Image (cartoon, rainbow, N blue to C red; front, side):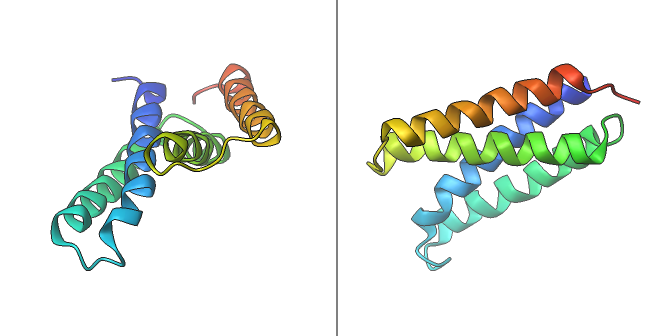
Length: 108
């Protein structure tokens, strides 16, 4: 699997654990806590594998960006958080930044 695919999967898992964290109720609920812990570990493993070929700064920024933007968007639908025009604008800018990092990065 190529490094960018691993990185995207790591970012998607970051969304899962970030959104799932609320369901753990401070890690007092067993199965949500197991899910979150598993997603955290898998996300970090995939990130570390992607970093074998990608620059650390780019990989980390893309991983965080996918997780942050994705968690914010998913929280609108799952937790009923507000999506204001300003919030949508800045999330869009984050997505543009992620795409820009991908387009300007070279794997080594």
